[in-house]
Image (tube, rainbow, N blue to C red; front, side, top):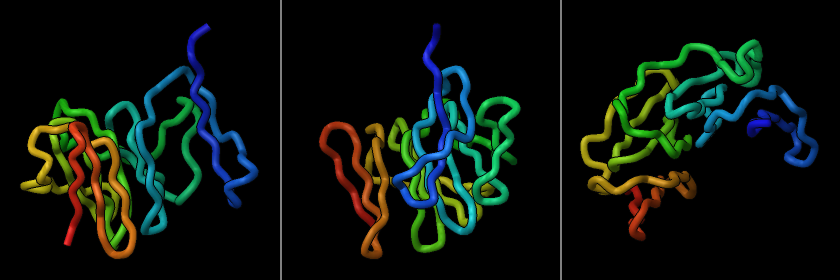
Length: 139
């Protein structure tokens, strides 16, 4: 038997409701902002159109997957803050979006070609962490 992935949601972070079960599929990151969840599934960005519901026909297939501006690079991190989503991934690539559908590349992520492992927002700043001990933050 293969590995099963489970997608669940919670209104209180204590009790979780299983939304979908499927064969393993990599779900690297998810963020909420501007009334929707934006997620990374199989290295592709996508989003929920209505904030929580998804199409469970394929296990975890939500609406309107945008074009992958990361090319062949994996997307490994996503967060929301200052009215925008920020995503990062392999090869130091980063992008931003205000709606989760239209994405623009960040010209210089300061990571060079180092993989980005996580991005967070707090206290008015974005912070990213990557391989080789790299940490960058926004002004």
